[in-house]
Length: 304
Image (cartoon, rainbow, N blue to C red; front, side, top):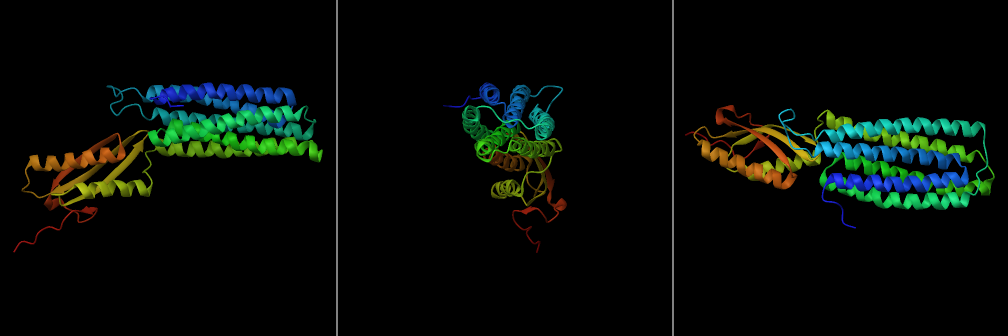
């Protein structure tokens, strides 16, 4: 099935699929009475809330720049991801509480096979959609889609663990295994919540991209800066689907403004081709301000 053209369209699909998964998991808990399956259903409620938050954030992020937000609204995606991480952490607390109660008051699960089958169906739905969201988030460089996909995939691992564990309960006869599984789910949810919040906060704090991305940017500048002397003080940050980049470009003092502008245009065009939506600011300087560091295009000629 082809994905919607807009990120907001994907978020709408995510909301619908989260509701389907929630219905299946609620039915799994209803027919089994398992505290572990109940915990999984509670986590899926957070998936629905997160999908709603992602839809709101993407609606904001897609708005064009205005007089109050001259750099656009891209960081709304990070706000959504931080909120999702917070909800995930709260979910872990609820699940841990249910596991604690189940440990002290164990009750045998009723009709576990039906619960397993329904939960397995929900897990399969989440696996297919989670992989789709992660791929779309990476391709479109969307923090909201990527965080949502990672959250859904964490639910998949939870579902797989539950299926295995619920098969063991009737075989072992240990009723408290249900609570142990719920506790493990809480720990997994804590892990996912921390990772989502960590990555989102890094985006809000304008953390520099990974070394590989930085090397790619430097290579593009080096390959397209013919005629300049050097590029230094290169700074960059990636906010959602847009890359912000600025650096100083040293050119010969005798070079005309027209020729310097052509070099800048060539570098900007190559950067946008490589990085996608990119806002580039280049500060042109004369050769007496060269620092002899950064990217050196050609050595300064020796004056006889």
